[in-house]
Structures are given as C-alpha cells and as structure tokens.
Image (cartoon, rainbow, N blue to C red; front, side):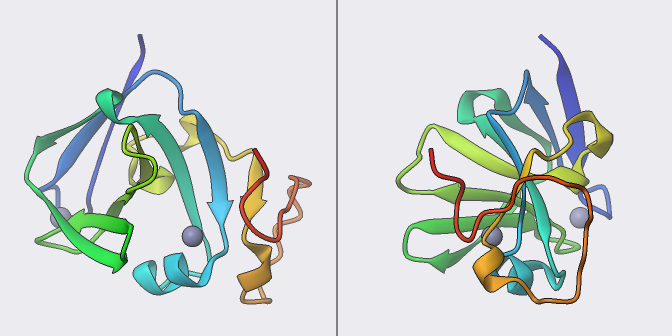
Length: 133
Ligand SMILES: [Zn+2]
Ligand SMILES: [Zn+2]
C-alpha cells in the first residue's frame, strides 16, 4: 500500500497517510476560510486507521460542537478535520502533504459560501453544499 507523508510549515508536526483517499475536494465554506485565512481549502479524506502522527502533537480547536480542527501547536498550520458523526475517518489538508499533486480534487463543495472572487476554470463539478452521497 502506498504511503504519503505530510506536515506543517515549521516541521514540528509530521504525519503519514496510507492508501487512497475516499474523498478529495476543494471546500469553499465559511468555516474553512476562517480557520485558514484562505479563500478555499483542499481536503482529503482517509480512514482514521490509515492516518498517523509521526512527530509532534496535533493541537485541536473545536470549531463547532461536532468538529475538531487539528493544527501544529508551534506554527499553526491547519492539518486535520474530524467530525463526531464520522469517527472512522479523518480529513487532512491536501496542501500539507509533501506531494499535494498526488491526489487532485474531484469537485468543489459549499459554493453557497463562496467568497466570489476566485475563479478556477478547472471544469470540476460544483455543489452548493456537500456533494450528495
Ligand atoms: Zn509547525
Ligand atoms: Zn469547509
């Protein structure tokens, strides 16, 4: 099984993921925007069993009652997203991977919150909220 490594800007927090993500998308939601100071955030979803922190410790912030966002406690790089209703999976920020080109996004989500001045032109499907499952 393939593995990919990733981590934060300062290098204190490093992680490893195994296998293929079950989802790969770009989120336009208001909360991701605030959590990162960026107009959109690309996310990958992995089985929790396939995610491992190798060095450092994830600091966590509860951005809403069911959601914990993980980041490097030293430099603040956003790294993970965990939802109480999906305890067996974890999202990682695509661009914290050492090779973010490994898992290109398949769609855009939460266009209903879009900031309005980023235009991708990538032809990927867009959804007003989460992609219907
Ligand atoms: Zn760091
Ligand atoms: Zn979001």
